[in-house]
Image (cartoon, rainbow, N blue to C red; front, side, top):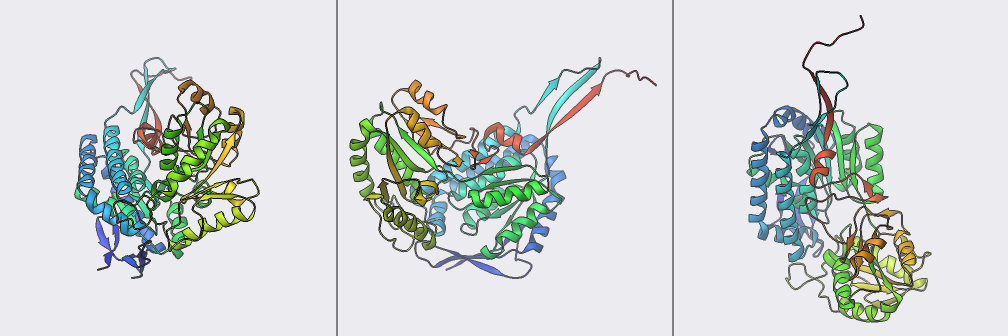
Length: 486
């Protein structure tokens, strides 16, 4: 039976003002999985009004009460791990390990946000005036517009709201059209059950055709005071432009063209296992996925042989099968886009070591190529699928140049058995994140997460997330009467 859900506004489930709905499609079967309300611009105003009305009282809630709600939501989310795995398999083609990882990390993000609620926020300042106490205090901004994507839906849905709520803001969350349940309504459900007051979190679901208008209306509303967005660089540029036009701060976590660098002192078997995970987890649909495997020439032949064999053995297909490693992409169109990147590269001289060919529906074969050059679209484009390129290098300088030859700068993995060697290389690669002795995919709730260059700006996670969604205010307290010149 098809699931039916409405918008979540002011603590209530309500239909879109127009009465319209839209389908949420299972990417593996191509059949409708759910039907959700299709919000319009008028619903944006309703959601912002609810968030604005709830702001003053939520900001005044005691830190300990706020912390209790976030901790309760974390426990409730973990209790639903089995349901979430089923939901993610149907809604986004997520495999069981990926779904359970989503639940675990998202729950810990809520716990980290809860801990931050009662952490010290502010400083005592030196004051010029004698007898004056100077303070720098952190205060909530107001209503935050949040945009959550589909690829790690529970992680990124929670991340979109946890720090803003912890800081005392209220939120209007626009869920991805491809995962309105997992990245939006599920998050609202667990927080509501944990005791979040009405109106503090509001969720909009929408038809894809209305996405641009809804985003623009949400950011333009004068009651919205900050924006956070996770998604592609292409859409992130538009979101950033809207936010800048209205003088609103934004945190943007955008696309990546990430490298996994295998240095000459690496353990080849470990490098093979690490790269396979870093490239093919969630069928390569992670912003941190390794598109490029850069391998020192002395290890290239052994690594390439072992890596291609491992990739060829990865089980692919039905995400509901617990043995599946490479599940479907988010839809047949996405699989077709990846196949086109591979075709273009092969037509221009690249070699397919394993995989390639045409997808079956939304399932694209796990693919490894060599000989990809700058005239091929895959050299520059984020694959966002189960595809990677293996390239050799002779020196550290060459590896650094290759890793930096992209407009993006999200993350990098450096496989090495020598930490100081890895650190020397890492310091020269222009990314917001780097993992030495590991591959490119990694996320922890207490760490500053974000990119450089066209991978965005601002940071989620830990105290950096709280700072992103609060304002620093200067407060002085005069302990005696000042003297004035007139």
